[in-house]
Length: 207
Image 1 (cartoon, rainbow, N blue to C red):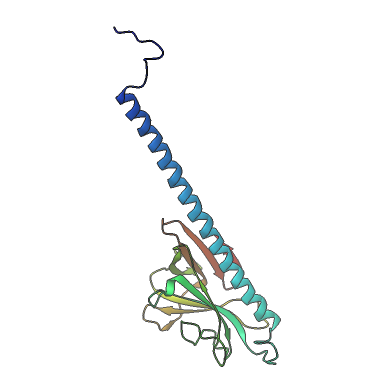
Image 2 (spheres, one colour):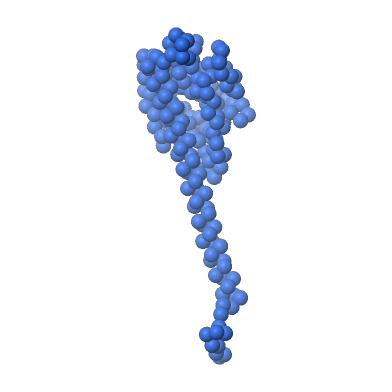
């Protein structure tokens, strides 16, 4: 067996390759977990922001907020519209004033602001996140996630209860049976999901 001095001894090629392989595996795990953590954090922020928007619509509706400063128009209710019907509609949602109190948004999805438009703001969803599905929460049985592609959530004074109007996959108003709320499922590019449930009672839950 050959002997070597401390100055001449070192890693063999095999040992070096094994060490590099271990380091690469560890770095890959760290990068993957960091990406998942970043995606999860962004999705949590998105769900929280959306739930706050629903709460704001609820507060405006109950408090009978003036539609625009100096307009002396206190008749509008307020709500949020979410849709999967159009191209790119799943990466934004609309905050609107329901001026004719028909419980849903009547305007265009590009959200023209001012004049007679009901749209107040278009909230764009960033970081590659998107609305994955809109589900009917039922009093019994599993949620229905394949029969609706749009929901408008509004609050009409003086009630704190949510008015939920669903649209089917063809864009027509539909009335689901045994409905008690709506679940909006947000998804990240790495398939992490986060849900916000709005019940008819006005309760909002982030899950």
